[in-house]
Length: 345
Image (cartoon, rainbow, N blue to C red):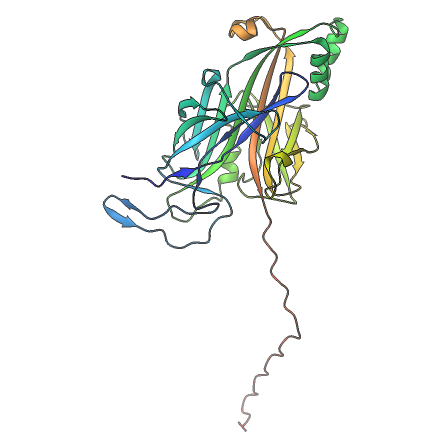
């Protein structure tokens, strides 16, 4: 059976600094050719024609149920600028979860010039959560570059430890892992029942370090706020900076700007302002001294002094609906009811 083609842009991204500048990595998932808010087109199902009843279109993009789509993985110096592909051998795990179902892997990673493409099959209806986790890589830092990185991350404990051990002027070897996720909607053409999607989005996908939105992830409106919770191994993590990068939808990729930095509280929560519509990237990084147990993980951690984990959450902020115009002119006076027994003229 032929399925309608679709391209997506689920994009999640995270920041991982290998020098003084940060690197952004993101994934993109299928977006229907019909555009944001499109419902699944008519198709043959079990030898019978099924045509969706015309419905109010949701404000977010919808993927056709059963669709095989392409997910793109890319990196750049700054989200969402000109990108480069990610080497497929660096991919450790991939995730595609529909609703509360069990996550399944993405398949067939192939690297091009600008992106690495993976295949996704949307075999269910509801909120899709997509994620990627990369293997640890080893980065050699000059003393000044590593000191600047720790300051950027707000890693006060690591800065203090290096000072106490008189390592401030020594180079450092850092083993870093990176993860990213985003969300998409999958529909079979019937009314989308998304009342529980906020609760589903709060369910962790399983990344070692993960940002979880405390709201419906596809109905974010400019001018509002969003609370996210940072989890490490499924537990809230406090005192970590959450960075915000946003690109206005009306401008090109180069328009992305870094917004205010929020810090997670005792419950692992941070609140960010949604200043305008367009792509939004939230990211966080933790770093600590490596342990003997860490060094047994792989070759990268075996030779490292420090270990870090980065994660990101890529979302879209929508334009608020226009307010209904207020009525103008004088109100029409209500007609008085005739009194009982009154004669008609």
